[in-house]
Length: 211
Image (cartoon, rainbow, N blue to C red; front, side, top):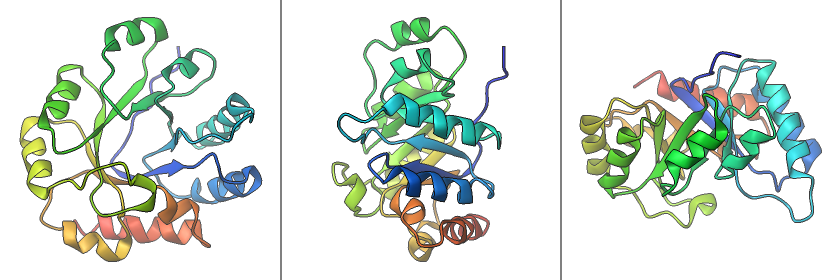
């Protein structure tokens, strides 16, 4: 059995499947040349599209660079593809059954808010990481409440899991996070919709290196 890939600290790229596929795959090929923590396929698929076909294309490209790929919410797709894991927007009530159904090692992550019980739940269930959303106002995370910096600090005291921050984060506002302890940032439009995705990744990495 292939060894489980891991999410490493750094820039975690979330890609929007609604994007034109040729543009999406082109931009992905560019950023895969950089050192990124992982790739997540956002649960935002076009109606009547061949979703699993796109998942397999993205997974193949990422695995050629030994980068893990996660799906947003659709854990059952791990049964049909080589996806490395699943990122849940909400804590699943049937998580034990999900793990039994998948029946292989996989990466798991959870979106957290100001409710610290979610952090405890993720820690108790031995998830691999958590991601706080939303740190700043964002068009792609408009359903998330703004997370208090105090919440993030308390979470780092509660768990040793890697903590990622997401929502409205740009290289030019990351200095506002300087007093926080965190392991990386999850970025959607700031990278994949950039005219120069590779330069955008480098800009985020440079800011993270200043922590």
